[in-house]
Image (cartoon, rainbow, N blue to C red):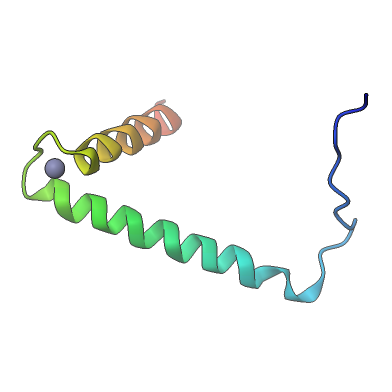
Length: 64
Ligand SMILES: [Zn+2]
């Protein structure tokens, strides 16, 4: 069995930006929501844990 490959075109179609922009907008919205919640003080709810996961991931990425 060969691993499934996506049949993505070599050149991006002109309208390819829409879905990505929408995805980014959703991610931004959720991130803003998590940050706004965490700014009030970390409790121990799922949102705080998600915030800490994102924060730890970002710290890892931007670590020098
Ligand atoms: Zn919380």
